[in-house]
Length: 94
Image (tube, helix red, strand yellow):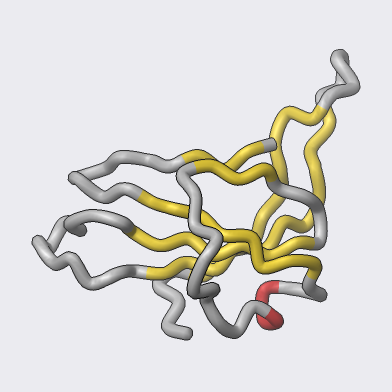
C-alpha cells in the first residue's frame, strides 16, 4: 500500500516515514529530511505529511498531518492488500 501525493486546490503533499510507533499519539514531531511524493506504508508505523504548495487560503505555510497505519486491509477474493486502516490528525502542530 502506498500513500500518494494529492493535488487539491493547488495543495501538494509530501510524506515521510517516522518508523514503528505504538499509536498516533507517539508521533510527536516531523522529520527534517526524508520527504517524498510517495511512501510505502506498513502496519504499526507512523508517517508525517506536509503540504508542499499553496493551500486554499493562499498561504505557503506548511500544514502537517500525522498518520498511523493500524493494519492492512486484505481483499476477500484476491487475498492481497487492497488498502490500509489509518488514524490521522490534521492539522498537526508539532
